[in-house]
Length: 288
Image 1 (cartoon, rainbow, N blue to C red):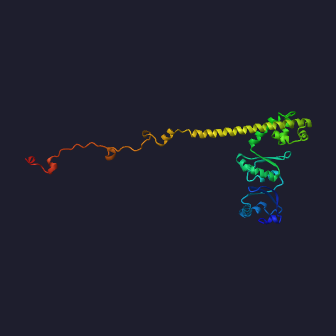
Image 2 (image 1 turned 90 degrees about the horizontal axis):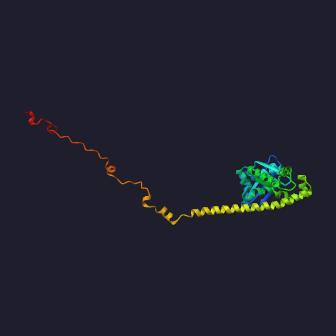
Image 3 (image 1 turned 180 degrees about the vertical axis):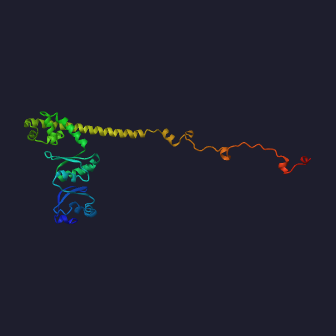
């Protein structure tokens, strides 16, 4: 056994969620305060957990610390993402977890794997949102719920406080449960549930069509971008490869006499020499 503390039950595995071959999350606790349950499972420099990972063919294993409080346990389960806030809605068994924009993809994980395993680990449905997404969801829910028959503003507020953010959420309730929340009769509650079921199908269809239209528009935009790049004519290609002689600026200049021999300077006028300058003495004529 790679982890003897588990064998002697000093460390207890409280919960486990696994997608075989890909990733596992394990929540552990220790009955001995001196034993760090996570550190003991991981080992020095990851030595213990690495051996187990190798035995499982490289499957990723997350060891998290168990806590009886969901406000603590849910952020632990969603590691390594940093969590801002957790809202719990016991009636729906749902937790809405708020994160910053830069932590959203990390909290959700590749193909939703991180949040899916965390949900299995804690036994609650976990929804990851940013603050803006939650506010937008509340605004939509208020608009939808005001269309319900027999509804009042107080009922709309009560639904949202209990974590109901869509028509679909209301369809999971029995008439007696909805009557208890809203204060209407069971007959009126049944009318509300029937309306919500029909409206949920309509909203789902509208959402599906909107996504398809968005995907089609994106594909058309990408195709248009490719076709624009491909529009270069053969003459344009030739002009790029073989530019005309006059279109290419030349940096070399032809040599000139001045560049070779320097600038011309006017020749100095020669002064005539006299006999004295030539012979260094007076001429016979001068002696007489």
